[in-house]
Image (cartoon, rainbow, N blue to C red; front, side, top):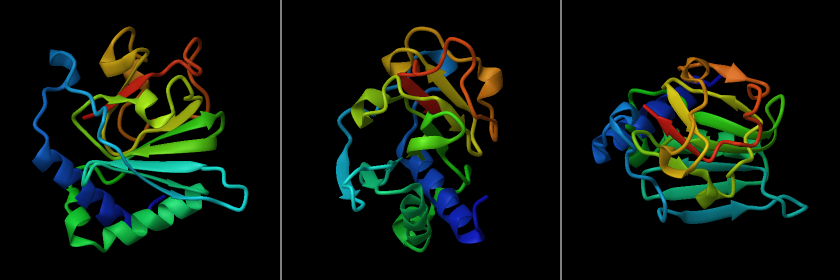
Length: 179
């Protein structure tokens, strides 16, 4: 669970995303994707292997860390910054994708909302094996920009989580969308 400061950060990040984006919901078609919006920061561990990345709209930020614990510490730091504190006003947490079952392996935390995120842009295409949906409903698609089949939306509503993907969906998700 998130501490109060993390919750404040997430509320702030979501508010900023809502303010800067006004794209249609997935039901009305495929919203624009987030390709080519990457600034990269990496904090390698002793082995130099990235374990957790954070993606959010403010400044088109994509930051990677040596562990999920380091990523969570970064979220706490961002909660104290005025430019990111408004982003999470409506959704207090982001979508967490994991490349291992049981919420293990490398993680990608997505705070962006109201646009399709093509996971290939962040090295996470066809790698999702477990997930935790945050405070906003999400959609998972088998192709980029919401194309192809969609993962059952009854399984990706706010606060849903799965320690493994439904049959036929392990390592199949190519794009995600948060409402």
